[in-house]
Image (cartoon, rainbow, N blue to C red; front, side, top):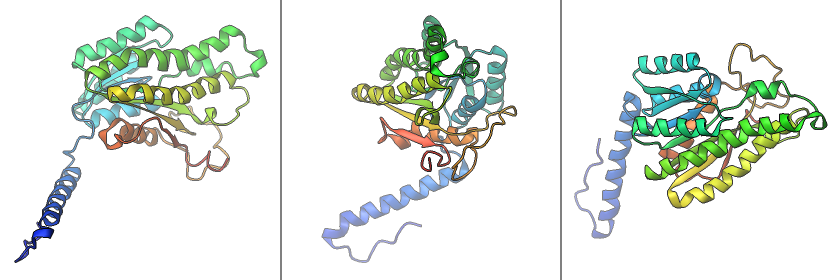
Length: 286
């Protein structure tokens, strides 16, 4: 119900009264749309999400599509990628699968360009890909890494996943009038982690690069932020010990997806160059 108009409104308070009425009506409209499910937080936007055939990336893709974005599901597995696309489409979303190999620069560029061509624009980039098979088979002291092993982890986790993807996506985001880049990092980059020196170096580089990209992207109306992810159970085989000092609980892929959704949406347009931690409080108590 709109606030009643006073019998007499002093000239000096008229502007304030009008403002109160407008804010009241806006709040009613916003609440009504949220309750009805009509409000799409990413309506009219297009997102390229690397590593989105499973785990956190898949959940991000499904959530973004549910919020109205056109989504490019990008990854190595055609079978898994097409399955995610089918699920999104069956739920009424708009998605395509784009094969992606972050160790191949030409492939990264082609995947980004194909997404922009298909949807007519690109406004969101989520750099989530991680060659976990490479990382998990190279857990050892830094002195035992070969140069080839070290370079391979940095190639897939930083150079291909962030540098190449962002390099080729930024012109499309700029052409769309601006957009948001969300990098997915790890708590391993924030503390010393034995056996993961190459991975922590890659994720630490991602965190630092995020700030540089935010500064360079500002004139183009492009924001860039990074999510530092804690312990998350992504699939049935993920059964490691819970981190010591976690203040809430072990994370779910949806915890990270909701964080990415906020950073990708216009709701966070005042936020750029930020490191957003989603780890159940692990770093706070470390």
